[in-house]
Length: 305
Image (cartoon, rainbow, N blue to C red; front, side, top):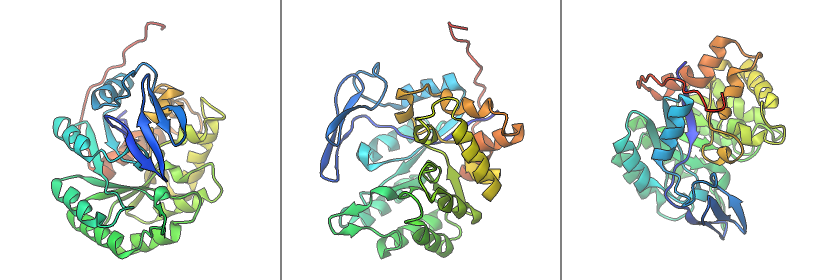
């Protein structure tokens, strides 16, 4: 079974400010995160460097063929590093650029990233608040970026505010740019009321839903995440399994579970057919992102087996 991860993160160091609060890499896998110390990556990553090489080792072990690397403001802009990752590992990673949409003049930065060759652009839509108010997804600069992305064949990876708050704006974007490929992340923030309104965006032919962070959202029930499986089933009944894709939210989720565990609860579920599992874990993403990589990644037994 070909497995594709549609939502992951990489960084060399976190060094940024969000909502006026610092985020800084510390040691032993920890970060200062908006006023408190959090275990950002596993403690054996003592320098906090969440590198492509560490991720590739996890991917090979978990038999994951390729991964889409998105960006988030809480990690700081990682465009330079991700451009280098794409150059060194073109068969394993599809990376997204990200402009700092909160700052004046960001559109020119976005134009440069698209011209540089990024295959996707990421928008953390749930973090677009500024002292002047929330940036609209339909403001002139956003719409100009979407126009350019559609023209150049660059996809959009976006996470939205909880519930349906930004759904009307997204519908305007989708209708205005019907050939812009759009992946909506975090499975619509599935544990929050109104999540299905985000899922319904996948009724449009150019929109997909990815499940990055779904194990985090169902962390309170923990493995084997039966609530997450039921949510995937419910979403599939609404828009079709061919519109849904697996994402891990690596590395944030692997402080609680292993990378393989972030998808094998799907493999072991009796609520999905084998073909549905193949669609969700890889076939849909292969089609949507145009992934041609074929690898033989054998299963390696653990010492505990």
